[in-house]
Image (cartoon, rainbow over all chains, first blue to last red; front, side, top):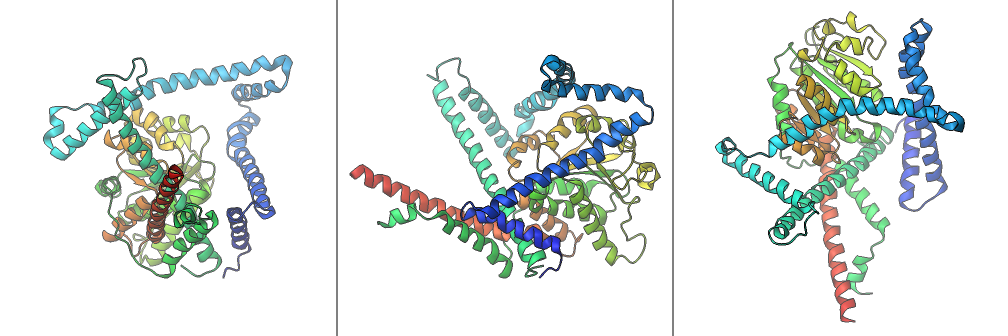
Length: 206
Length: 291
C-alpha cells in the first residue's frame, strides 16, 4: 500500500466520485466542487506563466511597444461589461473572424472537401487490387446514398426512395460504430481508475 | 413478477457492481486475449519502421489529458520505445494545457527504462541529443504554421526553459523538412488542425493516436491518405505494444494490453446485458399487447 499522501488523496477523490453511482451524496459534491476549483486555478496559473507573461507582459516591459496592440485588442473584449462602450468588442471579434475565415476557408476546401471528394472517386486504377476496388465502390455508394438521404428539396419518391433507404443503413452503421467506440472509450477510463486504485494505491498489481 | 420483468428491471447498481468486478478479475487471473492488429495501427508502425535512423525526426504532439491517460499514455510509451530503439530523434511538444505534465512523465519513463539497461553512451537516450520536449505553446494554429518556417522561432526555449539552439538535436531540425512524421496523441481535435494547416501548406505527414470516441471521425482521413496511420483507443495502444514487443524493441508488454483483457470481459458483459434487456423489453411489450 502506498505511503505517498498524494496517491491517497487521488484514491479518496476517485472513490468519492464513484460514490455517485450509488446515489448523489455530499462526498461526491465535495469532490466535484474541488475539481472545478482546482481546474480553474490550474488554468489561470498556467495561462499566466506560459502565455500572458512570456508572450505579452515580458516583451512589453522590455520596451516592445508593438505588443500594446494585442493587449488593447484583448482588453476590448471586456468592453462588453460597460454598456456605454460595449460596441468596442466588435473590433477584436471582427479581427478574429476575418483572420479565422481567411485562414480556414481555403484550407477547409483543400483538406476536407477536395481531398475527401478525391477519395470517393472511383477510376479504373482503383480495381488493380480487387478488394480495394470493392471497398472503394462501397464508399462511393455510401456517400451518394447518404447525400441523397439528406437531400430534402425533392420528396423521396421513385428512385430517391430506395437510395435514401440505403443511405440510412450506412448512417446507422456509422452510428453503431461510433457507439461501440464510445463504450470502449468510457470503459477504458474506468479501467484506468481501477488500475490506479489496485496498483499505485493498494499495491495489489504492478 | 415474471422472469422477463425481472431482467427488464435490473437495478443499475447491480450492473455497476458487475462491471467493476469484470474489470478487476482479469488483473488477478492473468490471461492474454489474442489481439488482431488493425491495418491502421500496422500502417503507423510500418511508417516509423521506414524512417532511417539518425535522419529525420518524429514530432510527437502530446495533447491528451489526465482523464484520457489510460488510452493515450500507453500509446506515447510504445511509440517512444519504438523510436528510441531505432535511433529516431523525437521532438515532443504540446498544445493542450493539461498535457505537459503527462508528456514529461512519458519521456522520463521510457528514457529511464532504456538508460537503466544501457551499457554505453551510444545505448543511452540523452536529452538534447536523442529527444527534446519543447513544451506548450498558445495559439496553436499560428504555431503549427510558423513551424514550417522555423521550429526554434516558435519554441525558442524548451519546457525546462533551456535555449533550444543549445541542443545538438535542434541544430539539424529546423523546419518540417527535417520531420518525417508528426504523430498527434490527442483527446480532442488537434489532428484535424494538423491536417488542415501544416499538411495542406507544407505536405507534412500526419499520424494519430486517438481516444476511441474520436476514432470513427478520422477513418475518412485514412482512406484518403491524409493520415499515415492511426491508433484507436486502448485497443490501438495494445496493438502497438504487441508490434513493438514482437519486433524486439521492448522486453515486455505495456499497460494497454492488460487493460484490454478487462475491456474484452466488459464487452462480453455488455453484449449479454443488451441481449437480456431486449428479451425483457420484447416479452413485456408482447404481454402488454395481449392485455
